[in-house]
Length: 116
Image (cartoon, rainbow, N blue to C red; front, side, top):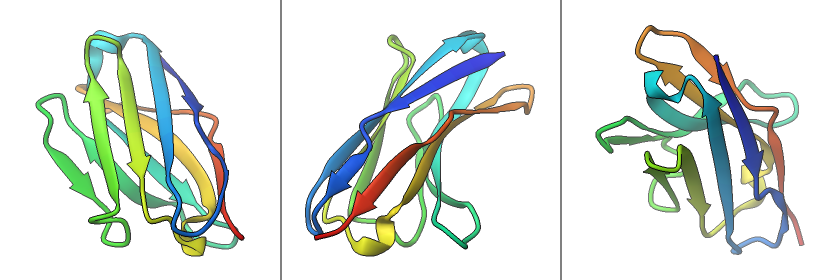
């Protein structure tokens, strides 16, 4: 099992920045992919970004060029730097990991609100 704890959400004005962090614990040796999904009210959960153990990244189309995902394998952390935030980025952001065996684990979620 892998436990995930997110931090860094909050309220920010349009055009602003936030950095999300996610700490993994437990069976960390089995983690392959780390990443973030988000879910806005009334919408389906969508991929924001992910990164594999080798550092290869993947981004959702709506965040390309604005968000950057990074990972510290020594600290078992994954980060999401969010710049040029828009109102449509408002959502609950969930950290997740995908293990080499195919199992996934999810964090509790952290609210990001972009509003003036």
